[in-house]
Length: 294
Image 1 (cartoon, rainbow, N blue to C red):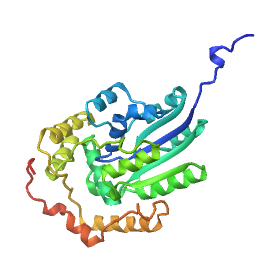
Image 2 (image 1 turned 120 degrees about the horizontal axis):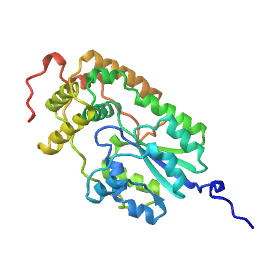
Image 3 (image 1 turned 180 degrees about the vertical axis):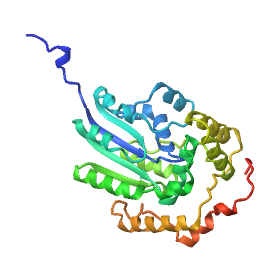
Image 4 (image 1 turned 90 degrees about the vertical axis):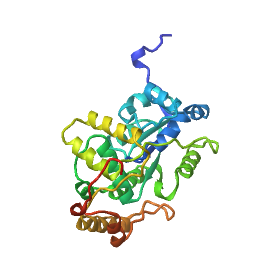
C-alpha cells in the first residue's frame, strides 16, 4: 500500500489556541514576562508558549519580555499541535483574528485593559520610547480603546469565541497574574511578577519627544533605554495638556463608559470628573524649567 507523499500530508493543528491580549503601553510587558519565565511550567501541563532565542535568554536572566509573535501566528499554528498560547500587545488586529479563526482549533481569548486615562498615558509613554513625536493632546484626540474593545467583544461573541476581560487597574500585578493562572489552569503561584522598566519623567518626556523629531525610531529606543535604565528609578511624569482637550476627552470617554457592555461590575472602567483630571496636569503655557533629574 503506497504511503501519501509529503505534499499531501495535512499538518496537525493545535486543539486549542489561547490568545492573551496584554496592555499595549508602559508596563504591558508584565504579563508576557511572567509567562516567559513560566514557559517550562506551561509545557509541563501541555501548553506551548513559543519564545524566540532572545526572548528565552531574557526570561532566563529575569528580564522583561514583550508580547510577541503575532506576525508568526500562521507558522506557529501549523507547527505546534496541542495547546498553543499566543500573546499580543493591545487589542488584536482583524488579520490576526482571521488567521486564528481559519485554524481548526478552539479559540479562547483573554484581554487585559486599563482605565481610559491611565491607558492613554501608558500608551503615550511607550509610543515616545519607540520613536513617536506627537503631542499628548493629539494622542488623546485619537484615543478610542474602549470603543475598540466593544467592537472586539461583539465580534468574538458573534463567532462564539469564549473571552474574558480583566481591568489591570482593578488588580495589582500579582493578583492579575493569579487570575491569568486560573484562566490557564495553572497551579496557584506559578506566575510571578517581573520588575518592569520605569516610565519617563516629565522632563524626560519633553527631551525624548524633541529628540524623536530629528532621529529614527531605533535611536529613540536607545535614548529611552539609557534614561530609564541608567538614571535613578523615578516616578513617571505627566505631559502638559490644555484643559479644553482634557474636558473633551472626559466627555468622549464618559459616553464610552456609559455604553460599555463588556466589563463586569468588578472590572468596570473608572474616570475622574473633569475638575480632578484638570488638577493632575500642567497646562502647556505654565510649564516650568525642566531638568533631567526631575
